[in-house]
Length: 71
Image 1 (cartoon, rainbow, N blue to C red):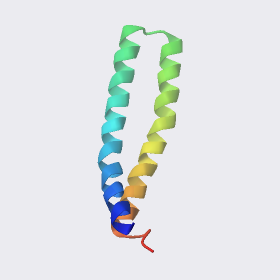
Image 2: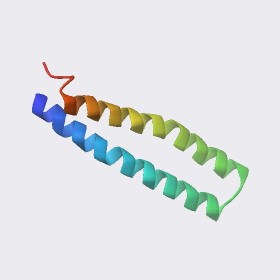
Image 3: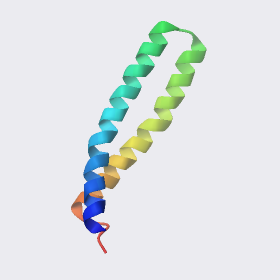
């Protein structure tokens, strides 16, 4: 189980920044297509909620890789 935690930790550390990049890229494309206040607020909320979640996954991955969750 400890090895699985470490592997998933590395996985989340690699996937989270990529997911943030594609989220911001998609948001900028959608805002460019339809630059109204509703679209900007919608994507701002999506980004504002998702980035802390993704950063939390990176932190989890770091601690899992260090062995903090080993039993």
